[in-house]
Length: 262
Image 1 (tube, helix red, strand yellow):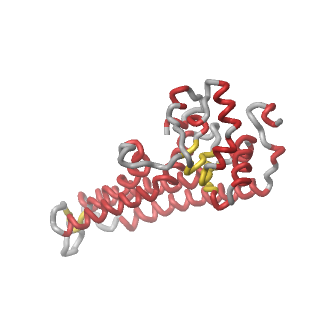
Image 2 (tube, one colour):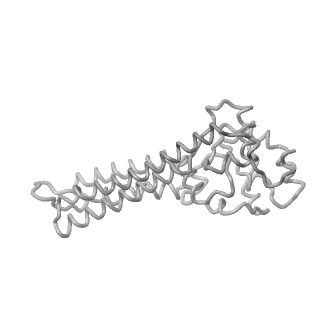
Image 3 (cartoon, one colour):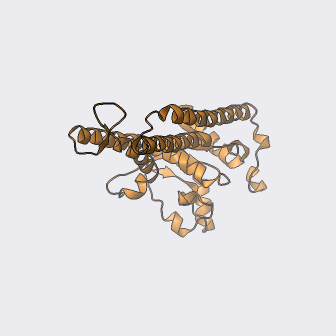
């Protein structure tokens, strides 16, 4: 996610790109939006299925190993059969680790991700002549892109450049090829996973140390209260997004250089 830290590019960032015949996703975003918001939205979009597969594989492996008696267990109240706990400890960390870091850990030769267009790496940011050629060929990039992935925030429809990108893409592709990623949605998912994990670990720790077996009755309402607050904030953001879309006017958009309006 470091590439989203700022808009300053160089010959080094340009070398990260390569010539391809097809682009899987054209990433449309605003550099004024926080790096973490865009990073979480994109990893959730591109890595979610892989993270779920890895999590299910770990859960199945732990279940099989536990049923064969190869994993530690603990007694729960008056139940006859002991319980395993490694699945509770490892499931969410595995999911979040694969979600956020799988592209950095797995060698590219073993796992090829999608080809994407990112302005900072695909358009030269220092050589003016090459930069002009890249900007003039933006329509070709859009035409060769299968989908457009939009990192949407309140800023998106206020910038003329991103509005131009999405309008140009829709003139070449059906609207079904647009993937809208509201920044608040990714935050709710990650925040919920982390909150659930810490609440569950608190319950597990007290169950195994002080033998307080009914802590779930106290922890789960706390988790659902926090989750409800996060979902309420997300719902408000969604309503504001639709209101902004309904009142959109291109004349209200701003651009970095006024000459870009020409």
